[in-house]
Image 1 (cartoon, helix red, strand yellow):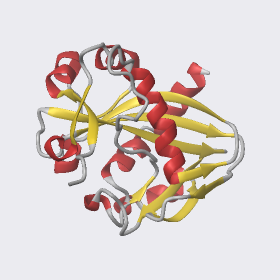
Image 2 (tube, rainbow, N blue to C red):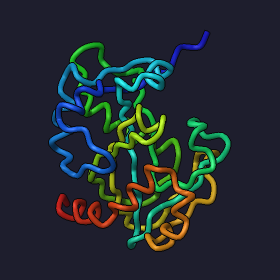
Image 3 (cartoon, rainbow, N blue to C red):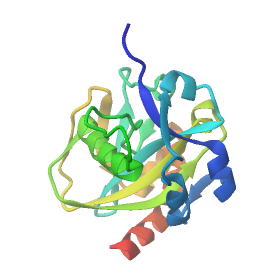
Image 4 (tube, helix red, strand yellow):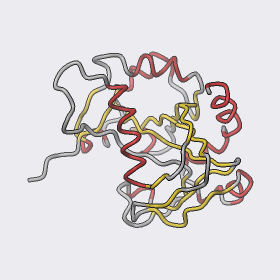
Length: 211
């Protein structure tokens, strides 16, 4: 019997204590400093987390941009999250899983998280250019069953060159699209991407102020 996938979660009440929100929250530090306190995040079986809204699974959501255009793609039939198949997305990312070399004690979950972001991106695409990386927002969507059990941490990558190729088979129709082009296909976007599109200007400003 294959071992169950473990995913990084925090209890919903932790977010509620800081301040539950809908859509994007840009006061990132206020949330991250509470979410990654030792003893707050932990791993639990994904099969349990997917059906228990008292926990939020932490999901990095990496938006890659170049010259004002966002990397965009459609999730094919091989996507791990079946509820998002055939939706267009401007975010790369996935669940945070434990790795073989994790220490048993004194785990720095923020470092674990940052390492996982890099790993998740590398599993899905090949980025052959330098880039900046800023955490610009947190993302919450209570309007559907997927959103209720996930919390997005939105990263904004500004690429020096638009040199990105797909690695994961689930990725199709990948291209850089302007905000105007994305608005024209808004109804095909997954809800997280729609919310990020709404806050794209503020993300750019937040990214610029942190570099």
